[in-house]
Image 1 (cartoon, rainbow, N blue to C red):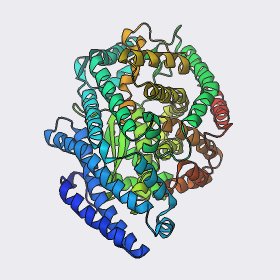
Image 2 (tube, helix red, strand yellow):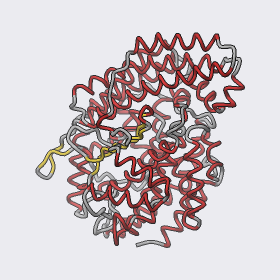
Image 3 (cartoon, rainbow, N blue to C red):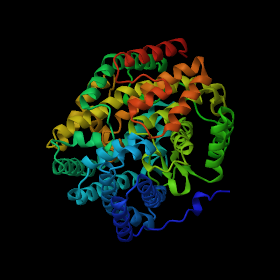
Image 4 (tube, helix red, strand yellow):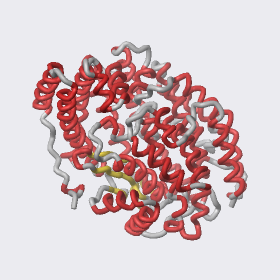
Length: 563
């Protein structure tokens, strides 16, 4: 039996010792006279990387599980300071790698993508920005702590943000409205703090970009995301295609939703509920949901059966929402233990099932490549990483009766609708960030005004019913990606456009579609985005006509299965 997560041993890395050992290894690398000798040193370097990165992930996981734990809060502070120095070691290694006289042999062994990543990373880092990177990390941690501090009085208890969600999806409209008001009262109360944190992040990220020789943070953000296949102008064209095809359809879907709910006006607090009797609700306790998930993965494929058995037996999931726990969900990977880890906040809604498919998709992808020794290849590149997660959501459609019984088809309708309704919102987040970093001197009130203007463009149906904080453009304070991983959000939209293609194929030829999905997952991060897509026979969402095609397919299914 492999070691279980609670028994994983945490040791704070000795950064000074690692730096000394690293210099020794790189000195030997530069003096090596054969490709084989350099390969041996690369393997030693990767082992040190796995040790450091696994400890960083372990500290982060345990800190987010309980932000009130002072020990792991201090360890997170340590890594906020240490990781830029560790990044300096990585770039020193990359510098020698790309200039190696044996680069051809090394590329043949490890793949060209490793060299692509190395070259992009070298452009995105300099020792001159270490202090700025440390400051960026600290501010992001402060943002997470602020979100986790939410203790909002509602329905007789103090609740965190995740615990409010079931009330925001209640069939009773008055409850939805009250829960939404309670939620945004927290953000309104801390408006100055959120504004100040983002002001600091825009300033420090712009400073880093200027020190590295970029005119703005935008090209640096693309390098950080390892986007080697396309640039901002192509993403802008993709957003325009979404405006042309997705925005009109989402407006029609919202109008259908309004009529289905039997209300005269669809307000923002109505958007999350699709049927007057309420959304599909998973049946059973958290323990029962996990048991049903295990049944589902046993039936789906031999690979998923083995995967989920290990996830449960090794206790590689923390799913329940608790006071002091960070909001949201994620998948991390501890290479030292060959262990993916799923973090979530169950709240009794269909989102709990979404976590058991979405984050499990991430975990499954990295689990398939757990023997891989190249850290760069554990996860797919950011723009492709969401294909395994969103793909798993749709490949598990045939098993939704396990969770929703007679409401399974209702869940599928809600799931597909919400997946498509998300697309313009993802573009809005991306457009907002491009504008903010193109004009970094905007004042906080101007940023909020910009957000509201873009909302009206991408979400023309949204009506805030006069709610002052939201009318002033504060909705985005809760969108952690904007603060934590800038420019990542469009990756969800790109990936969803690919997943819709897999979903269509799975409806008629599930076996073939699954094999395509496995091929993509097994490749991990060994290829760039556009080079990865052919493995699953996918058309790039950046190509002309892709957005139009997937829009037609989604529209046709929803029309045929209108409930």
